[in-house]
Length: 152
Image (cartoon, rainbow, N blue to C red; front, top):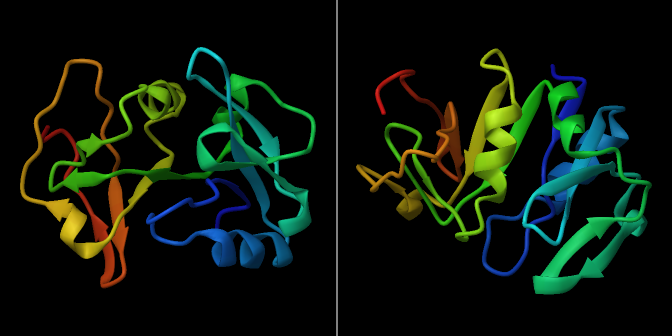
């Protein structure tokens, strides 16, 4: 039911998001995708269909639309987050640049943040650092898992 969704274009062996991006866009949702900045923070731009994506460093696909700034994430109703693994408390293992920890720190607690991983990557426990930001839910091929808040 969200009208504004922040997501990402999957790469490599990540669970595929490109069909989802297209379906959300076709149904009229406002879809924001990240653009990696030199300091590993994420700027955001609107997704305007598959032809609006271009190859970027690191095997990423980024939108060609004008950037909307790092604070644009605050307009999202739902945020989809990539991860290498996520535990039952919502702690996530990312690529190590801290990009999504910064993004998640900007998002209101009322916004649903969803990590996207394969079933085997949804694990009982991961180590955490003080700066790590948890997600509130996980989606895997086997289903949607709402996570307990405040149990990190």
